[in-house]
Length: 234
Image (cartoon, rainbow, N blue to C red; front, side, top):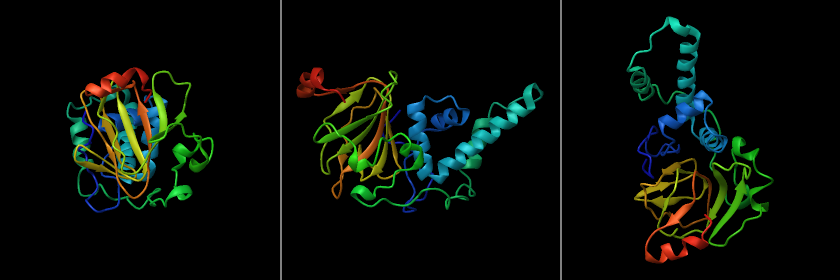
């Protein structure tokens, strides 16, 4: 799993997210088998991305047809490939007008999509952030398998080089960051795992606020970072 998703369903300059959850994640979400923290992240992305809403709807439709047919239908080995070809076809942008695609304004004007809004204890500006350069606000603290947080990274700040003990899924709510040559802005999802060693940088202009779901603690890399690992809780 790479930190910069290669799926770019929307044309460059369309104003829609350019980086998306993997199709495997969208299928898992459509099947209703995704863990709640990741499901919140995917649903929040979908509120900003009509293209992924279309893909999930198509997955749900195919799943419904298979269930309706029961044992009377043999599913072709290349069914998923056929479905992907249709989703990537010329009609894939048919419903881009729907959903919350409004850009946010700065500060208290941040538009929080409804799927995430229900998990926040209050307005983003009124939240209790811990930390300085990278402010954190914990969500879903009862989930031991995933850590779910809002992160507020100061504009221009570079996150120290690190890797992960599990999956890291990051959804940008406002601002932007660059990572391994790719830029992630509002609605974009960045994915990383133990195979990725990276150092994201928050873009100038405004702080970058993200929803981050991790399946294991961050592990700093490099000689100095390794010394700090016992003191890091990110």
